[in-house]
Amino acid sequence: MDYNTESSFRSLSPSRSRVESQSYGSCSECKQKRTAVAWCKNCDIAILKENFCNWTSGNSIIDKFIRDTQLSANENIDHLEWIEFDQFELVENINKRGAFSSIYSAVWMEGPTWNLDEEAEVWNRNGPIKVILKRLDNSQNMSQEFINQVTGVRPYHDKPHDSQLIQEICSGLRPNVISGTPPVFARLMLQCLDADPSKRPTASQLYEWLGNWVTAICDDPDPSDLSNQFDVAEETKFANLDKLKFNNTPCHENAIYFSRPLDSIINNESSSTPFFYGKI
Image (cartoon, rainbow, N blue to C red):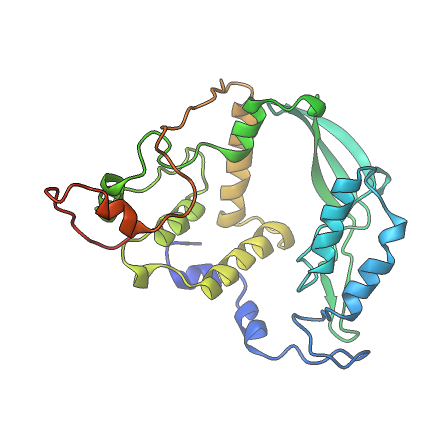
């Protein structure tokens, strides 16, 4: 399947846009309007809240973080969940190691709440489902190398964030696509950074396309070109982690990563230096 065109993004799950365009109806219990398919913020969040006493990660900060996502959820996949280790069976070391972790395959017996019972209008778990588990090694001693792996190098870290950079961006400068990125993701990234705003995807398009990706990768049992691209990217990442040599890449002293008014940057430049406006 070709993923170069907008229509090919949508073809993965043609029913999604139809679902989004219709009303979600009202909750049969409290009669309030639903915010998503078979999701009532009033009743479903109340159920999650009642279950707070039945689980804990053992860390109060992590517990609060997970609970906060549940209390603000707008749909059934819009929150985190703590899964006890005894929910996994057939745990097996697959003899692959990350730079900071051990990799295991396992079967999550209950599975996530991804199956919609359209008649009862409720979400059910779709386990058992095969999953990958990562165990962090020496996680109490997370180093800067680990942080670099997780966050990556910030764009334009090696140059001052001044009017010159603005002009370079207007002239087409863009962050490099990291080697090993799935081609379909790389194309979407570059489309989002297009100099012509009319050629960039809208928020609703991104929501639909990314949702279709999740469906193809996680729900569809049959391999596709899309799922294969992400599988290859994951395999490449795991295969290369042990070979990487991490460096604490320094940022330029004038690389500033918080919002500033552009007027002040432009006005601070010498009046003898012409400034050419363009599209960002």
